[in-house]
Length: 485
Image (cartoon, rainbow, N blue to C red; front, side, top):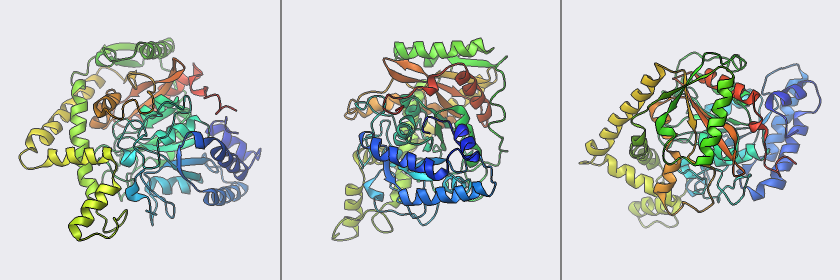
């Protein structure tokens, strides 16, 4: 069962080949037996999952035909779930049990999905390796000495290891796409505002966006169909019409113009990774696409721009964790100042503290204009680069990451080296665009991801291109040895 796609699982459930309860028990057993070596889950809810599966079976027996009805999934532990701990990978929220569901959680619950548990992540989504979690590092199923990427590394690892067919992730600067590339799965970061952020613990409010992670573009389209759309309770949610993201999957690529930014194929790109990207692009050419050289001249400014704006917003969002209202509180505080200081000192990890300090500095009197305001001006230039490019091409393609997954601990002592892992993904968030990572083969036995970037609200075309690539290749079907057993 764990080797079937979501569409295949849905067909099997409707035809009574097996029940949702049987499928759920199978997934829970795989989590128990395999996940100790990956650490991809923070919480597993056996009782809740089996109850949801029984409810899904009753709905199936009554004749319901929902495409996700009875399908198990996992949520990144950044989405609030009623009655189930939502920790955001932090000691600060280790004891937090939300009284409400995130909109994404509610929509998928209503669709009849079966929540197995919450996946591991970098603390408060701050990281590129899933090593900053209070619950320990997640490990890559392809090589457990390597990272799965971050911050949605737990979701990526769980899908790659065939522990769960679907998972949610969030992407602030590449946190869906980069782990998808490292783990050899498909991950989509929608247009900013396409998916509600209500109940998604905030890191950087103008950059965060939730999205689907699965083995194929078709599976991602099915999940996106369920979670996309206007949420009147989220002021950042868009009223742009929602498409059926499965409707265009089989459209031919004849006449498609794909832009290749010269900035994405220069110094810093691993040679073997570059070869795999070009091989994937050649397959798209064979299907009728045309490759066009383009430039995104402000690409090199995306890292410094992001690491001013994101920490600035984080320092504001994380100020709510003060030891007073909810979350971690230090023992026996002497006074209010001691309560604030020690609760935050003990509750936050090093990377979170680092970004709070950077962000607070950038927003402080005397530095706001020099740093934060200037970063917002550069952000506008980065966005304009993409708009200019899309006047001549339909989508943009390139590597998702500079190379395959790096070793555990290899970059934890060098934050700047870690930040460079997001060099091809950050600009997309700054511009609010949709983008996805699609498996493009392997380099030295490790997965490589092809990144596809589209104009605002053009997720359907990205999914179409990804699906057509996956019809011409089997890279998305490849699995780690233990996961395929």
